[in-house]
Amino acid sequence: MKKFILLLTLAFFISIGGVNAQSVDGTLKVLQACIDLPQLQDLYPKAEDNVTKQIYVMQHGISFPKDKTLQMDGYKIIYLDKSEIESKNISSYFLFWTFKINEKEAFVEFTYENNLTSNKVSLNLAEENKVWTVLETKIKKEDNYEK
Image (cartoon, rainbow, N blue to C red; front, top):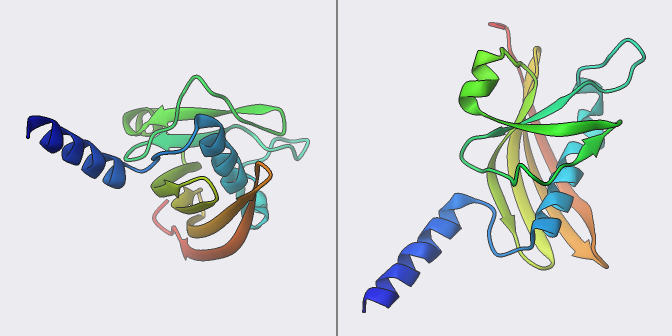
């Protein structure tokens, strides 16, 4: 009975905790698809040469393996916890709150915050031949006047 309760508790925490029964490789590919979303590219902070500056992912609620790095325009994606985002005064970052993934499908919800807008994004993705493709995108932009 104790094993059953332990397994039931573990299943519950996995179901509410985000990244579930999927390989780290699949998880990182879905995360990369989120970062590469064409509708967000113009919102990323840019250097003088118009190359994307550092991309941050807040490790809050849903966390990703810090030892597995992704890249965008030659910059590594940096994972920081909430206190690090706040203490470093970082105003542009990803915050994931839903990250459900299995062998062939994924559903992801996140916010991309930047100085001007809060962009709430929902994505449905499908995997075929180890390539994740975005099937449906919903984005709701809200102005951040207080920043």
